[in-house]
Length: 192
Length: 176
Image (cartoon, rainbow over all chains, first blue to last red; front, top):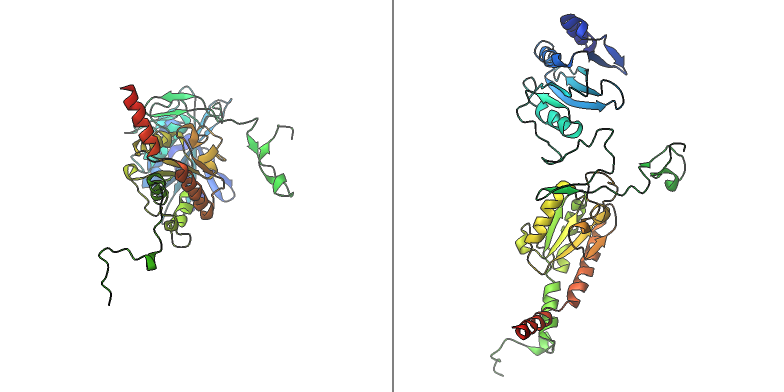
């Protein structure tokens, strides 16, 4: 059974909830329209279709668009070598979707990382703490409206942060056949 | 046959007696056994390990005793990227080291934040602890670490061991 057949089986089971499978460079993605059902779909994919390995969960900030968040599940069947990608949108007001931790235990840290960096919560997660930044840090640093340089914070006894000097940056590398000086990252204006 | 002398010093083998001040001798002892606190935080730590291994052999400079306890070390070598999350741990370890103590900022990240101009990285370890020697490079070669160690040794050699303490004590006596 190929990844496309697996995607079609999910579609047959869940119907309108699932988009037509999209293929890009031999990889199959399906869009799940209701994030609340992601647990059921993942559970089905694991138990019926043999996707026993959750490679990664990633999140995208579509800043300025609605819905703002896209959460992406990368699934793999270890024995079959099939890979499947599930995408689902979450609105900024809600910023919450069900945890898939009961399906794959590895989801624990992936979901904590997304919560830490993007601020999307996972309902039913037993231990939704920050994983990279410290408890009490007040921002979600991978959001598009968070400046690259950071913001000043101070949590006495734990940690502090100060904005990094960007000196007009960020530094951008552009493709160039020139020498090392031409290739190195520099402060560039959008016109360049 | 002549009787052996009672004491163990043989000037024919060991040369003449060298006279020095106690202070200079103590400084000489001190600078040739700088025990490092290897604060390995990123890839620079690999080069620091190379500096400690056979090819570069940091023990030629009396610093092979890498102590993972701050109580037993003299010189913290900050080898790697210092994140804000690690900064408080690093400061605490530095505070736990006994005086006198020195700090080497090894590599671009420890010296300035390096390529990490971002929200997560401390922009130079000198923002939280006093640094004696900075080493450039990403990462620096082990030779550069040894060179920094020699610079630290020069600095320690110049620093008074007793003179300062005696002067401070006399000042203290004057006050009381």
